[in-house]
Length: 187
Image 1 (cartoon, rainbow, N blue to C red):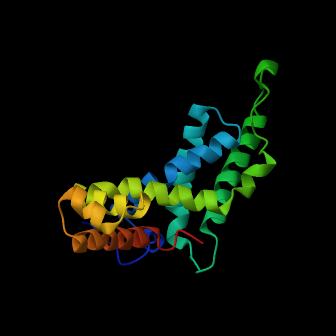
Image 2 (cartoon, one colour):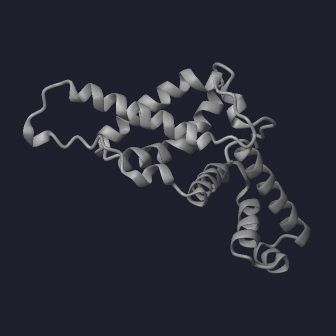
């Protein structure tokens, strides 16, 4: 199991930390794509914006100074929105046939008001999906049944053929890893 002692954001400040960048891309690409679609981008244009955001982040994150209580999500949204607007301005300078004039470059007002709970749930779900492969299936299933499905430790132990103590240990290991994965990413 690959554990981390520092937050992902701190790791991204180090140039060349490929594993941290891969984890960041896995966690955030779906969210960035969702934002791009909410900004009115078609699928391929959304993909292009996401790529541009990731390139910008490669440049900016090594200098990003996360402060506890800060809003990384707000900063990430600002980077995405600024690139979107910059691309729209560049696009507006080019002649566009009237049939294609609806460029989707106006941001809907509610995009900036993404609910905190929605964001938190997205990150937790995404981190869990990415982490699952790092655990033995029995460990993962024991934690899932106990925490998510709210089954008793005795029931889980009986179902999986393990001890009650093993159920508690599985829960502790998975939740510890989840806290490590999300350290610094949730405001």
